[in-house]
Image (tube, rainbow, N blue to C red; front, side):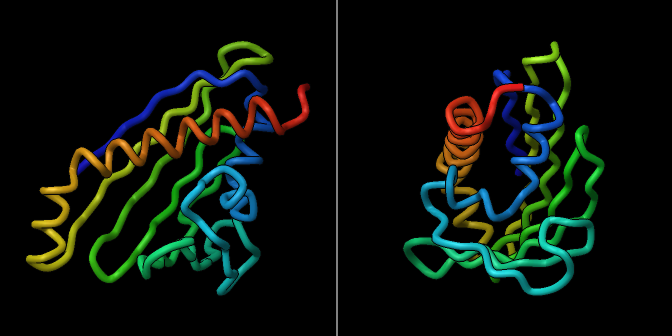
Length: 147
């Protein structure tokens, strides 16, 4: 299953991409994340891995930074027992102070229960993806310094 979100954000391409690619910022804009726990490598850099710990429940993801070509693109791979997610986030300069964020998430559900849950939860998953990207937009437009 694929989910794609596109948003225009007030802010320069470089600072937005840097803020988005910094895993330590995730709990500040993703309301369902409690913390990030580094596992290996320099956090946020290509090849690094870290644990994404939710505020509620036990749906912990292990994240691996697959590709980091900022300010243009960031690729992550998330894995949990029931689902893997391949994420590509790109940042396109519109003007000096405006950037388009394009986020694409490809979900691969594991096992029969994961596949059924993914099918039943399709709408909720897409809604959560949009909610996270809109939360980043609010974070960026209200908490990041203007260039």
